[in-house]
Image (cartoon, rainbow, N blue to C red; front, side, top):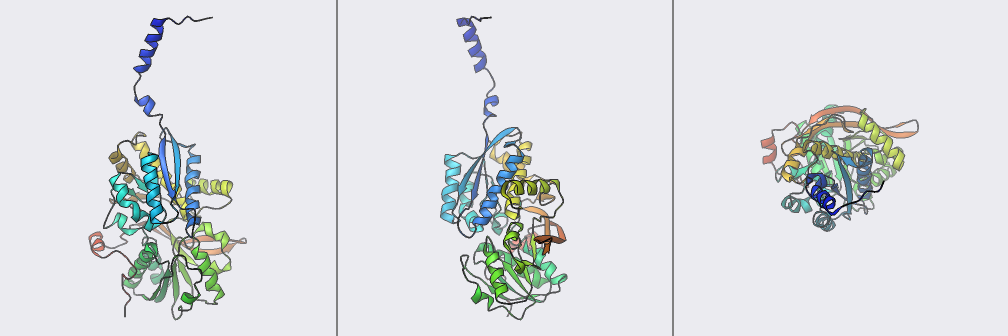
Length: 408
């Protein structure tokens, strides 16, 4: 049957359409997440995993959070401060993102913190720079992974009290992440009666660790704090040098995503991480299955960390009813998130936006022909301040290349 549209009917319909509430249209606008990651250089392996973990989470959620579609915009930082500054400006000013995931490295994060705070841009980052949630806190920053030293405090406690080590040498990349890790290890290890006798600092792009390995002797263990693909190079060269001194590692050294690239040189290494592949949670199983299906690789700290960032963002958006325009309300919601089923287990945030959660001591073993990490101890509810008084901790200098100093 034909319908005759009169002028009066047209005007009435137009008026009704104009009278529809604006939020119905506004709500159709997607949530924009900007991902700052690195795809070139020695940190690229971790950066690519960050992207994979983010995409894996969004796939699990059908690119929809709190009833709103999600658009992911990726910026490659190039693994340097200048590139990170450029990319965050593009994401904020050109792409109008609602929040940022990343970046990876501490030096990248420190380069953009002031700009992000001025722009009131919420950042959910893996970068472990201590002072982002300590002496110079960014009010728009949330970290569900941990500070540099937060991984090493439990490792030092375990080394001193359960492995009974007394003397160690540390070796780590010569940049903020390495400095802060080894400072944290040294403080806790020495407070428990141990001693760091030497600290070695190869540059981040060191091709040959032989001159540093030659300085390792007369200790109970070596503590390595390398990032990206550097743990692979170091352990291979360490084995080639024929040294039998046990190796302890940070979370990135024993990262699950690196295990397929290691050989027997990694067997027996003990590491500490905020993520462990053998954790029995539904979300961890879902992450592992999805990563193996999509990328043929099990997830590690970098991909799991970004998957967890997605969970935090989703929980916060559910608290705000999907709204992102009120940045103060959004950051408040982000920091108030408390989750139980995540790939890293249960966690909350402290009043500075840093995670309080479980950290895992793992031993790298060969099982059924494959290298795996087996969790041998869990430290629950670990704070960025360890067991120290927060006020006292913050009154001390930030962990650095020379702090704490070596004891004569």
